[in-house]
Length: 450
Image: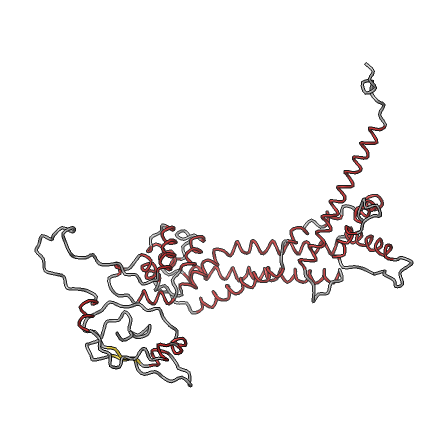
């Protein structure tokens, strides 16, 4: 038979008075054509004399349509094609006249009348996905609609909203389902779900906004401690006199080791990048019994006891190692983007139903959220300035500075320092016990004296 009109051409509308044919212009069917494109002929199709069941097409975009075989090979053309109109109308009209029967209707088992079939508009996979989520929620469709309109988190929780977001109908699906104007009870539950929500203004934006609102506090609770923790760790690195004292001693020990008489060129340096601290573990003593780090820790613990507990000055460093400044920046950018989008939505928002509480709920929230984001951005700028100060303080090229790697290098040094200090304490304890045991006189029993 001739192709039906492309999507959007008269779906769901009552047919006009009988006429030989009805046409749609190429502009209506395909949108604006490229200047180089050959405009297709007008679409023509007979008009049924009765209301017919609809065929719900999956839409092809105008651009794709203009390049498709439907247009290029003129498959839309109905020239010299005759349709079996009477048979089509008899078989596929929307409602058959009720047969005249006796007052006492026959039993259902003996009746040959078929029950009305269920109408399926969504494709099978979408139907399955929607059905799984909606059935698991155990909430009536009408209640879901009221909850979304009223932005009522007592009806729909954040977890439920996230699940709904994953299966919400697309604009095309809504268009297809809303075009169905027959008995709505014939629609499958999944299609009724789309129908129930289809007339809510800005459905997807509303859901995104609501999820953002319910997630906002938790998101801030993740970002703010990371910013403050990082800032505190950077402050400690800038102001720990003990840590700087240890670095000074490391520099002088290293310069001493490098200042060999056989060297043709001086290897003395004024300072070093902190990633070099890992080298203290790699340098071994002649007999291989200890590393330069073990030696250094023992020396500092013996001769510079005031510096040995410098890790106590850097208590926020382990937490800061887990923080990514770039991730914080990205999270703040997402917050700002959502706030701006909701603000713009509210400016021109018009309620779509009496129960619509979008503006009432989101208006006050977004004012508070905007101020909260400003405060987070202010603290982030302070943290960024501290990062720049630390990079400058420890000789890092700001253009190449990798905060995560830098902090990890320092934290690793703190860890191996503590481990070396513990090894020293254990060795001293063992030596003391051995010395104490060696100084005791043997007991009579040990000498075999009864």
